[in-house]
Length: 359
Image (cartoon, rainbow, N blue to C red; front, side, top):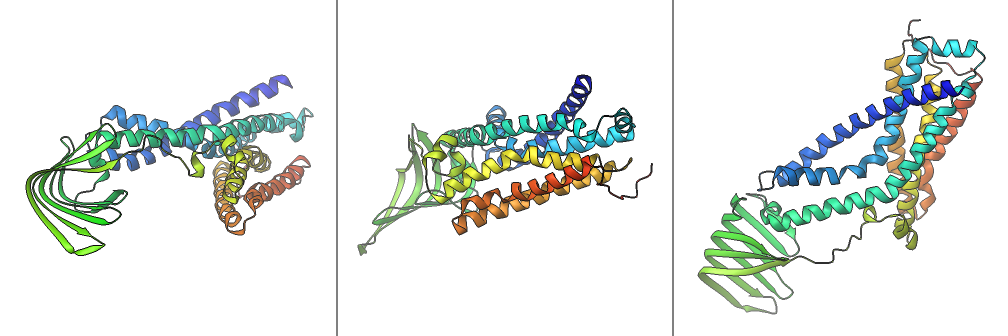
């Protein structure tokens, strides 16, 4: 039996690794295109771009792990069925229940890894990526401005720029509006240079004009014209507060008592248990499919994953709105019942699917 378990575990490990890397590559491409729109062409080097991209990948481990496990489990046991390996094992008196032991062990291990990833790796990954982007914005402040569009990526500041030269931080034919507590400063200029000194952003303006309005004294409207003028636009905070729930690790979430924090905690717990729960369901389906049903099996696995994530997304929103965090566990409850029922029928060899596949 040990030889059998080693064989199944090794074959499953290879498939999981391939699937994991494949799905990670797909996400990598998607993230690369999204981040590239922000940073490339702004004077950001390729190494800096890759650094931002790689720091954000651990945030997706919790999603990729269950998908990889489900697809790998289905592929492995359909292959074993096609090669008559399952028939040979059953003829030797080895039951489906005994064959499933490596699945339970692998599912439990992946659930533990998924738990660690969701509770610790993902929040730290989100924080690291945001900090990296902030550092890039400080170095290349033009990243926050889109040409021929109104951009308002800094509090109280709105830009409209016709042309941008990211390498030099140069902007041409621009308007910048600076909203303060009691004043509104609107600056028009032909040329300007954005630069960052430590944590402060400055705008050097050449050949421009400014309109200053005091909301308490609107009649004292001021119009200024100048050749050279420097204005302080923004000062980055040295102590960034990552208040969003996705930035918080397990100990931080446990300290908070609000509904949203409790929901976030249970949501991550729910997703971390999904490899074991959905993996057992995938195994039950795979050993019950006839020979030659590889396409049907993979389709069923993907459909299963999609349904799980739809319920997962909806249950989180319902939990927050209703004030009942436990609703976030709904996907695991539903699929847990399905897994237990399917596994029982598979062990009793009463679960079968008529897919029209040829023997």
